[in-house]
Length: 365
Ligand SMILES: Cc1ncc(COP(=O)(O)O)c(C=O)c1O
Image 1 (cartoon, rainbow, N blue to C red):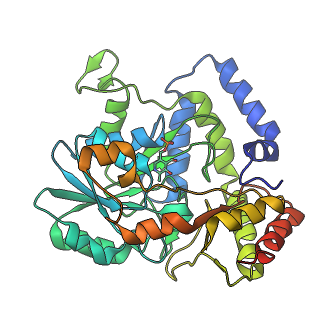
Image 2: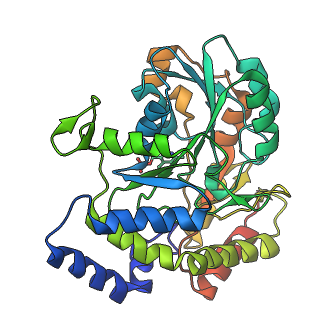
């Protein structure tokens, strides 16, 4: 069976380097907030573009800390796309703020044309998620934010090094939030995340908040958290970061073959906007009869998945809190009813890619 993803492949690609780094950190005797975290923060920021970075324990906490450090608080509203991932909404809610949903565009990204209708006197910000690895078209979103005096934030958990007009996602907003969950394009071997900003004061505040609210040892200036990135994950992330260009090229190669060779009128391929680049965190197609298509793939020995079947506003916790119901966001519900995730990972053999293509092409509705 060709898997949708298989993390051991990513490990095997640079196994010796990962093992050496793990041993180096273990033997160093220093495990929390040391030279590996500092070096990762510097190297990640340097590769992204002009910005500063604070490593934290995961992507959800990056959102919570980054928004808090940027002044989002109880009672505020933050606009997000209705087909985004639940963690983005949870991060907003951890700050006491509320997510307000708008429908996505034809690229599955936040539709700038729909933002104005969602603005209320409580709206403080727009939080864009660059979904599936593709950069969102930022100019029209920046324009609406400027017009209404809203802050812009970016959830880059799925879009490491995906540029819009040549500039990396993560460099457009007041602060940006990264996850290094193991499946991500830059994945750790456990939980990890980061907040990035061009404003050093926000990053300094995140550094304080992540470490019990302390600006120096045993001196607490904020009601803080323990949301630190650890040395082992930071060290392993540095190894992977050094290979980032090859890893992204592998994904682009797989996606390129899918886009050129999948030819089946029953299957809709993903589209990429001209100004945006796709880094193929996930390769998402659409099928009219999803169940039938996924069953066919399984019979052809190809695994597939759905990212995700239930939109965040219809999850039980959100229905209960905000009273959302089916039909509130029909474009999102149509997407969630038909999307299928094809195999995409750090390394695939050519015959595996061909097997996926043949399986998709042999499907009949
Ligand atoms: C868009 C998005 N935001 C936030 C997160 C949360 O990241 P983490 O799992 O590291 O907390 C994820 C992770 O899957 C994500 O895909």
